[in-house]
Every structure is written in C-alpha cells, then in structure tokens.
Figure 1 (cartoon, rainbow, N blue to C red):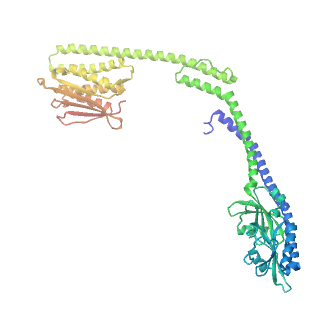
Figure 2 (cartoon, rainbow, N blue to C red):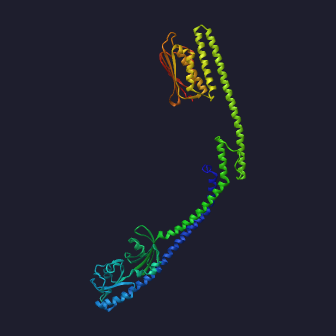
Length: 560
C-alpha cells in the first residue's frame, strides 16, 4: 500500500537506489578494508619509529653504566680526595654533553665532591634514588624529578661504590641533560601527539617527552611485561583519563630501563577516519548525483507535463476556465496524446454539462409552473367554497366548509412558497410559518374576535413534504383553538407559536393560548384525528394536557 501511494518520481528514485545498492556496498567494503590496512601500517610505523628513536638512548645509557663504573674505580674518587675528585668529575662532565653534573656522596649522604662547585647541592640522604642505590647496591636510574641544584627536570644514574667486603663506601651519580638525551634528531622525528617515555623495571619511574603520558599502575606493569625482550612490542592500553593509547615498548637497559612511544588512538585513527569518511562521502556524492540527475530528468521529461495536466483538470473540476490548448508541445508523444484526449473529454463534458443545465432549468421552470397552477387551482377551489359558504345557513355545515377552505388555503400557500423560492426542494420555515399564521388569522376572522397570533421561528429550511405536514398540523391546531372562543366574547385573546430545537436534533413545536377557555379541547373528532396523524407522520410525540390546559407541546423528528 505504501508503494502504491508513492508518486512516479519517488518510485524511480527508489528503483535507482536499489539498483546502485550493490555497487555502493562494494565501495563501502573496499573503503573499510583500506581503513584496516592503513591502521595496521600506522601501528607498524610506530614500532619502527620507536626502535629508531631509542637506539641513541640505548647507546647513551649503555655508555653511562660504563662511565659510572670507571668513575667508581678511580682512586681519587674512591678515596674521596676532595680536590682531585672534583677535578675528575669536572673533566668527565665537560667532555660528555649528555650530562650536566656529577657528584659523589658518602654512605651517610654527605656530598663529598662534585663537578660544579658553584651549584648548591644538599645532602643526598633523603633522596629516593640515593636510598635505592644503597639498598639495591646496583646501577639505579631515577624517575624524573625537579632538581634544586639544576633548577630543571632531570634524570640521575647512580652506582654504589663497594669495598672488598661489599660494603658501600659511597655513591657516584651522573645528572642527565634531558635535552641532549632526547636529541634534536629524535625530537624532530616525533609528531606533536606522540609521548616518549622512559620507565624502570617496576614501571613506576617515568620520563616524559613530548605529550604528557598518564598511565595507571596496572597499565605500566602491562607495558613492562610486554617489553620482555629487546625487540619493540606493541600494546593497547588506556590512560588514567580514559583515553585509548597504542604504545610501542622497547628495552633500553635489559631488565632495568624501557622506552615507550605512545600515541592516542584517536590521533592515529583521525586521518584514517577522515579518509574513510572521504571515501564514503564520494560514494554518497555519486549516489546523490545519480538520484538528482534521474530526478531532474524525470521532472523535465515526465513529471512536469503530468503536473500540467493535473493542474488543468483541477481547474476544470473547480470550474475555472481552462485553455483548450494542451501546452504539451515539447512533451513526449505519449503525454501529448494523453493531453489531447483529456481536452477532448473536457469538450464533451462541457457540452453534456450545458445540455444538463438546460434540462435542469427547463425542469425547474416546469415544476414552478406546476406549483403555480396547483396554487391557482386551490385558490379557485377555496373561492368556490367561500361562495358556497355564503349560501349555507346551517352552522355545522358552515363551520365544516370554513375548515375545509382553511386547509386548502394552507396547501395553496405551500405551493406559492415553493414556486416563489429559488430552491424548489426546500421551504424556509422562518418566513413561511409567520405567513401561514397571518393567513389563518385572516381566514378564521380572528381579527374580529381580538385574537393575535405571534410566531417565534429560527432560521430553518426543511424539505417540502415535511413543510406540508407541519403546516397542516399547525393549521389544525390554530383553527381548532380559535373555535373554542365564545361567539359573544370580545375580550382580547392571543395565540403564541414557537418552534425551537430539542435534544438529539429534534424540533419542539409549542402552541400557547391566552384568554381562551380550554383552548385545546378539540371537540371536533376529525381535527383530533388529523392532528394525531400529522404528528405520527412527522415521527413525533404530542404532550397530552389535561382539560383546560393553555399550552400544547409537540416534539417531532429532525426536519432538516
């Protein structure tokens, strides 16, 4: 049902979309495959870059261990000879750009000698790396920290000096220059979104280079386990901020220090996703161009001509003038033929419509003429009855003839209203009932008896048959009520006729009499029978009042 409700252009577009769907799916599959291949290539590049960047670091750290061993074996340093020790340290730092300062501390943490006497260096006893060196009695690489002496961040490699009994006689330490350690060439090969990190075997000592890296304890331990060999390994972890990272880990000092190069997964995937989005956008653009093209061609070749014909037929149905030229000179042959057929149908319909209007007008004229002649004939009959009434002296017979004349005049008034009205099927009660009551007042000689008939009727049009029955009912009620007047009674009297809406679309006819004794006694059995018959014919009910009641209420079915 939905397909049947779609216009031609929509159907063609849907058909084209279904036709292009397999090609679009192939393009999407190809784009996804390329995306996965590009992601794998990016991960391999990260591993290779990590290996390249850490080779120099491995050389420097390996050389550091040898230098510390040589310094620890120097007699001046082992003997803690202040001047000679300072000179040895100063010569070592001056020739090696990777270090900024060297110190020797006794086992009590007191600084015994240093390479730069101008830098204030406090006792080493509270320093973590010093405590670790004493406790572990091996080469220690500290975590990154802020050095008060250097007023900069640094990293310390420390080696305890042992005597023949393996007792610690002091600690010799080198302070790294981090800028030199990372190297200008290394920094130049790193992208802005890359983190280069140095960590010890426990994973808790980090050296940050580039973008900050914030890993939890579990993530750091996982990285250490991943870097179990000197070959670079790849790991996927999540930092403390909830960001997914891809990290390449390689060993700098076996079992001691590791280098980890990390990149945000979003940073890697962003260009890949952009490429994927571009590929999908191209596919979508091709699809849209095809859809728009077929839509434009369909509109130009078919739809606009069909809309032209639809507008023409709509104007014709609405009665607006329509040019009898198709206006389809540039349309396809089939549509031109269809337009010609529609215009011919309009011409035939116009001719038939003119014939029908002429026939209806002739019929209306005939009906009006019939109503006019019926009304004239009824008036002639009423006139004959009026003449006959003048020759009758018996009161009962005279009353019978007058009642018959009143009924005939009521029928004549209906026919007059019909042929004078523009609608031959409906009667306007708001105009007709007051006219009928005035006629009843005149025909019953109510004016001589001082009876005034008032009406209250809303705007209401009813079919002619209902109006005839209602008028005959009202005629019987008013005429019978007037008969209840005493011949010698000259007191003023009044009759009120009201038509109002009732429940469920029904109508309520209320007739009230004032100044008339037992106005609705209806002594005439014929009048009573006629009133009850008219009420049944209207599908209504009559409120039977007790003797002497002054109001009668009749509810009838919906008249309009």
